[in-house]
Length: 85
Image 1: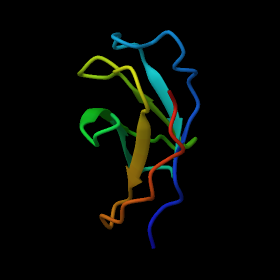
Image 2 (image 1 turned 90 degrees about the horizontal axis):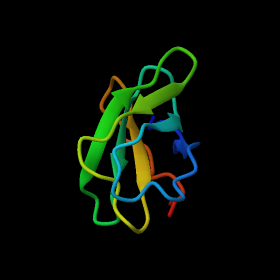
Image 3 (image 1 turned 90 degrees about the vertical axis):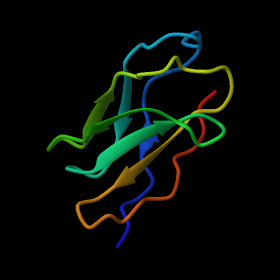
Image 4 (image 1 turned 45 degrees about the horizontal axis):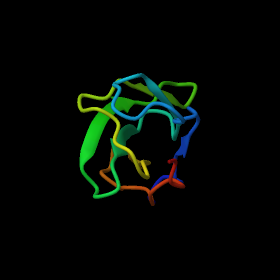
């Protein structure tokens, strides 16, 4: 069974063109990917036991919608999170 869609908790207002940390709530132990509007990966992290993944992007956060997905240990991928702009 795929995990539920993660939730981007960080307010991304004013974060375009930065690599500031982004906090995402997701299934504990899942691999969380932060994605741009075209589905390109910006960075990833593993959600801890508290269900929080702290992602430091390896590429600058773009202007436009950003989403996240979570993949569990069985390689089931969640639906995309609600987009943050």
